[in-house]
Length: 257
Image 1 (cartoon, rainbow, N blue to C red):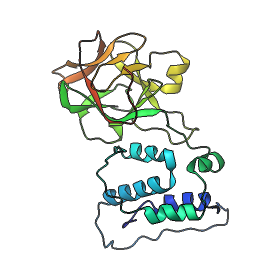
Image 2 (image 1 turned 120 degrees about the vertical axis):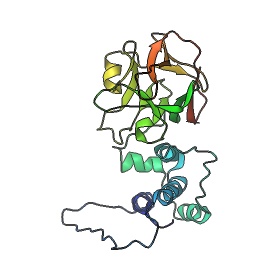
Image 3 (image 1 turned 90 degrees about the horizontal axis):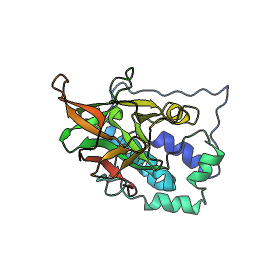
């Protein structure tokens, strides 16, 4: 690993998978002493990302995709040099460490799994490629089109269930605040997925890379419509399909049309 970040996560995973344990005790006292001056770059993002990918590749098996999704990085040809991990993989094999699935079942069953995600990243319309679908203000629950920046409000996840999650994903099963894209009226809405499912709302979308996004029940398409009163000149609407095309950054498995 380099510089900073990731080692705290790797320590917990590695110790548990390889026969040890990390316990929280009432009498424990742990401190993190910050340096007065850091002898390295102020922006640690690149180092933390690289280290996180090393942890994923060595210890997380088929669940490593979750780390790539969290950083919005393609799982194949990421363009990030994580260094040689041959020795680390050999050590894991030598110590006969357990699988990451064992860790999830036995140690951290509260962690929410997203193995059904088949595409992720930012969602762009060919009509205006410098804009991305964005969750918009939290209080309004109305997605918008905004200048692409690729940060959390623009994270989009398309599941094999044909649900489209927008924004942050809940890390544990106890948190049930994931929001899904729903066809409510002429404008799309972001509604908690569990609520939308319980109320049998229109939250399933047919989508293929470079194609339309069409609601499975209403048959209406998610499209852009010009609106000069808005900051970036376009709004999201639900209407009869006119042939607009959408693309998402990363595809894990083929998207059904």
